Image 1: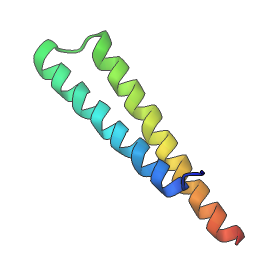
Image 2: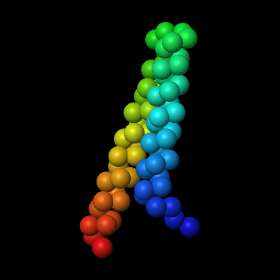
Image 3: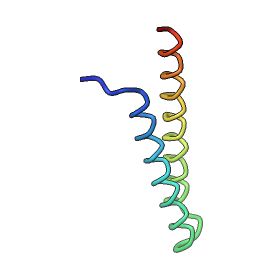
Image 4: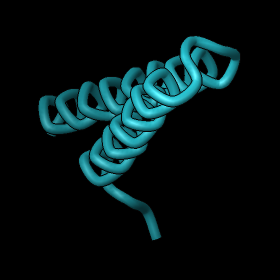
Length: 64
């Protein structure tokens, strides 16, 4: 069973939001440290993947 690119984009965007929230909370509690940068990096990768899935959806609809 295949999942749609739209569903995957939403999932990655929500995970990116979660990592952004964790980074903000970590800065408030412990300041800027390794974990904060890790959370920001993971959020950036997730947002990039969400963008690519949205672009894939656009390409698939255009090709039909």
